[in-house]
Image (tube, rainbow, N blue to C red; front, side, top):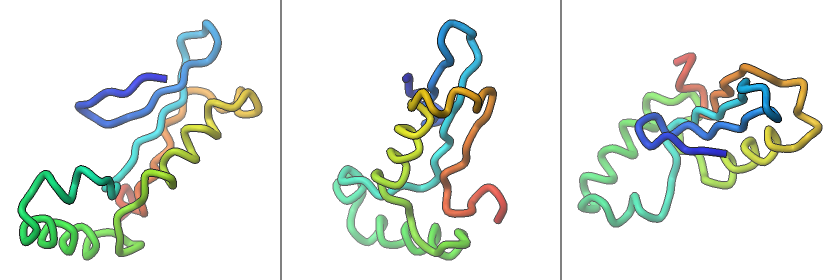
Length: 93
């Protein structure tokens, strides 16, 4: 599994085929978010994201991680060449 910091995409490749499966997460609540910006700016961004997302909140790291684990499972071998949006509906909003 690799992470592309530019797009924040987790990629799971399929055994030697060069074809992968990827997760494209939307806004995700992480501990660093509470320290990276002043509290008022963080609250402003959080509110703007919530207003724009159909689920009205950021996702959690656990919600994204579950999909990464699922796609890394051998039972998901038939899922190839896909990018799964785990984004609270951001892709369709």
